[in-house]
Image (cartoon, rainbow, N blue to C red; front, side, top):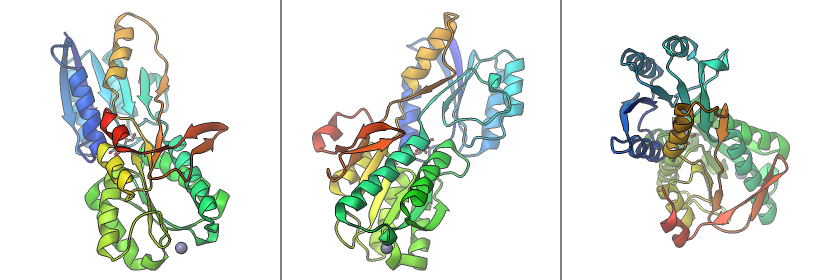
Length: 315
Ligand code: GZL
Ligand code: ZN
């Protein structure tokens, strides 16, 4: 029986729930694992406590989904001194010595942000919308998390490259409630002048859409409507993309359970594993105005979402 301690960020989003279910169904007793699952409610101090508990319990592996990138060196040194391999899942840690963790498996948030910015440029060009007419509100994720850092950077590069106007930038902490609250305050400050809301995950988008409609505006791709962009492509997010409430949703795949198990099996067999493993990701949109985007000389298809695609998805 392999004992695995998993320190997870918290149940802030549909994405996080899908990730947790993937980890729990993979590291089940019938699969030969004892999983100790700790939910940190988005607080780093709870993760530090959980990791120290895992060390006390002498687990075989520590899985860490870090809420933010910094502040892990000390506790990871304690795990290393205890001879317990640490696998970083989803977001990245920023540590002085990368021997403090065995490997990282996750998604490329900067690429996701760049894809979304290229989609917006393609959409604006196709619709003949001048860059100077694009006023954007960025509802950021948890500040200091890899997803927020990469998605924000991707947008800001687009703002610089295409001359858009970044009107507001505020964290929605990846939750629906905070996303709604932030959207309400941004609309109060500059409602008539918001053309695009760049939500750094689906749950923020759900909240932002409620706030936009409550303020009397419409969401969608038509003239005078507010474009709501999002990330995660959860089932609820793609359902909103099918109706056009979300105009484009960039995938961030949460199903890391089987990938982490594959790494553990290799480690159990004494095999080497890659230090980093990125997961392939797609992009979906309400319509086919933009059919593909180019990021770092690589082309990514943009798929117009349909009910049958939605019905077939794993999450
Ligand atoms: C992304 C992940 C983010 C999701 C959010 O890799 O860390 O955290 O985008 C989730 O939905 O809460
Ligand atoms: Zn405008």
